Length: 202
Image (cartoon, rainbow, N blue to C red; front, side):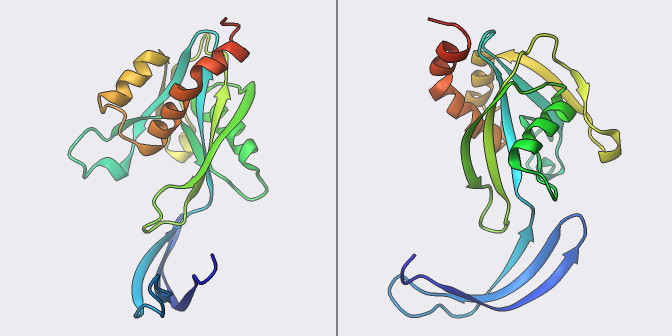
């Protein structure tokens, strides 16, 4: 970080609601020395979030969610996206609290163990959102159906699929959202170890 710095010259609120949007005037140091000219950027503020890949190492299955996403309606495809469990961290909650809460609310499943995968910015070009990704060990027997909180407008179809089918959905482009792609890529690299450790697979 030595030698790198930035200065916010002005921050103007643009919108305040469930989300917040600000307009920033700022400048930052340059790799070649000195400072940039002042630039203007809009910043979408969002609290930190959590996502979970629910995985059953005994059955070698993954719990996937399908729901309507307004951000996908301009993409020319199907705005009902295949995703994994996810939610925002609310005041007084830890990332682990959110993982357990959202798994129950969105997929009707209880997490037996949480394995921390990564923490990363989702879209740092314009959003402050930072996400903690977990793999959640579950018993997928009996899971499925329609879930979500009606008061939050959630209508979530939950399916249990074999890992190889979930991976085919990634490779075919049917799963288009970055977070489940990252989670399933991690699972592809670590699945054999998880099955040996937790699934009793030799």
